[in-house]
Length: 121
Image (cartoon, rainbow, N blue to C red; front, side, top):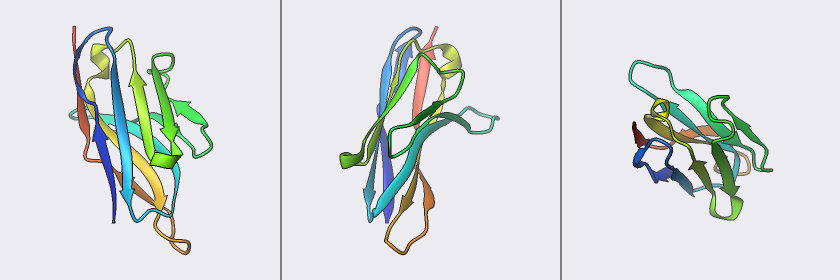
């Protein structure tokens, strides 16, 4: 069984910073891409940023230059450093990872439970 456990959400003033963490645990044989998505009520979940096992990152235009995604492969953990936060960043942030649980297993996509980010103006 695989789990993605997120932490680091909270309330911050506009212009402030937060750091989200997501650790994958369980029967993990390999992890490909990890990343973060976010969702607000009534809207579809949207990409924030992803990172490959080799460290190649991809960011949504709305967060480029403000958010930085990094990864510690030894710990199966990704970190999202969010700076210059804006009210439009308010959302529930979900961790995502493509994981396989054995050498013969296929790749499955896993999601965390979500962590809330609130920004006061």
